[in-house]
Image (cartoon, rainbow over the protein chains, first blue to last red):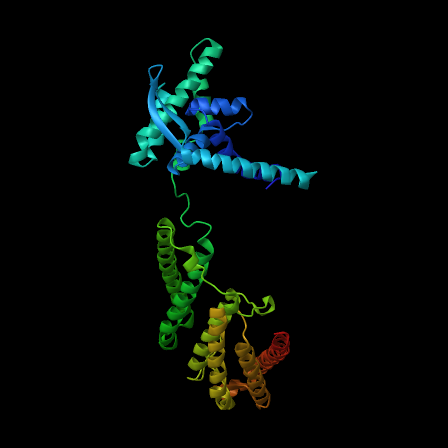
Length: 109
Length: 316
C-alpha cells in the first residue's frame, strides 16, 4: 500500500466519526436528503449519497432522528430532523468534540 | 431517465423487501434533484454520458445497497479472536481423531504412501466440515449478539505461564507426528524380512541382518512414545516441562539404541546364489555405510535436542 493510500485510509477513519456529528448538527433544522447533502457540502463537508443516506437511516433507527415523507414541488421527499434524544446526544457530543479539539490542539502544538 | 430507472431496479434487487421502496424513493428523489440542478446550470437536458457520470459517482448498486444492510461481515471483529481459537481447537481435535481412527488402516494397508494420502484427504474433508460448522455457529452468535462477556470470561490468575521461546508451530509438530506414524508403519512392515528386495533383473535379495531384531521392540517403544509427545505438542502448539523432559528421556534412549546398533557386525545380509555374492559385496558395503551415516546423523540430532531442551527447561 502506497503512502497516499495509507493517508486516504486514515483520512476516511478520521472523517467517519466527525460525519455523524456534522449530520446531527445540520439536522437541528429539518432537511430532506439532497438538501442536507447540499448544505453540508456548502459548509465544506463533502459526503456522497452512498454514505449519507444509509447513515441518516441508521441514526433514525437508533432514535436520534425522526423522519416523515411529505410532498414538495409535486415530489415525495423524506424530511429528517433531530429527535429529543438526538438533541441531547448532539449536546453531549458537541461538548466531547470541544474537549477533544482543545486536547488535540495542546498535543499538536 | 431509463438509465436511472435501471440503476434503481438493480439497487432494489440487492435490498431486503422491507427496505426496497423507501430506499428507492429516497435515492430517486435525490438523483432527480441533482439532474434538475445540473440542467438548471447547463440550460439544457443532460445527455446520456452526463447521467452515466452521475450514477457512476453514486457507485455500483451492490455497494450502495450494502451500506444499508446491518451485517456486512460473516463474523465481526469482536467475536473473531474467539472464532479463530475455537476453529483452531476444533480442527486439532478433528485431525487427532482422524489420525487415531486411521491408524489400524495404516498398519493393515498394503501401501504406506496410499494410506498417508487417504488420511490426508480425510483430514481435508473433515477440516472443511469443521470449518463450516464452527463458522455457522459463530455467525449465528454474531447475528444474535451473543454475550461477549461470557465468551471472554477470564481472570488474570488463570492465565498460563507462557514464554514465546516455548511456542512452536503446529505445522512442524504435525509434520513430526506424520513422520513418526509412517516410520512405525514402515518399521513394523519391515518385520516381515527380507524387506530390501532385489535390484533390476538380479534375483538376489538384500535383507536387514538378524541383529536388528534385538532393537525391534525398543525402537517401537521409543517411536510410540514419540508419537504421544508429538500429539501433546500438536494440541498445545507449545512445549511443556512434561514434553521437554519426555523428549530428553526419549533422545537418551535413542542414543542407547544407536550405540547398540553401532556394535552390529553387519547391517545387511545378502541372500542369493553364492556365485553372485562377490558382485553384490560393494552394494552391501555401500548400504552399510549409508545406514551407519544415518545412525550418526540421528545421534547428532538427539544430542542437539538434549542440549536445546535442557536449555528450554532451565529458561522456564
